[in-house]
Image 1: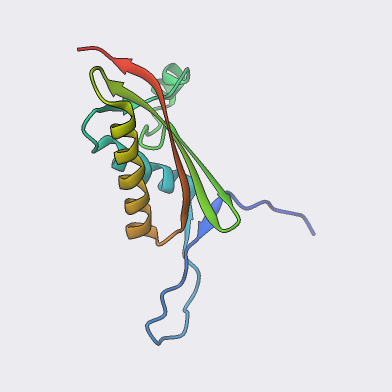
Image 2: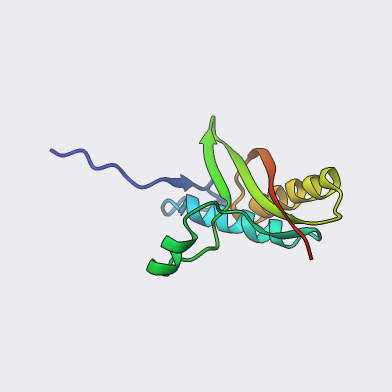
Length: 129
């Protein structure tokens, strides 16, 4: 018997509505990261997600950039997210960071029904117009 390690997937809480559970729904960490990145990019004052290095490699293999700049960890049945963002110059960092945290937590809760323990926002770069 060989040990096969499954990829990192998060199990979603079943919503029963009086029916028996028909199976399991799992979502890849990249999906969680994509949702978080999309929510963050909707915040006024966020220019882009930050992804150090790797841009050349991503261009060569043509991988999707949707989840870059987000680290996803599951600890004690709760999500711990770290978002690395590029802010627009002139923005108020605490206000923009708090709005990113709120929108990301709301999007994850609404779309995946997963408990978000923390959303850490790191301003890694500032874009000057």
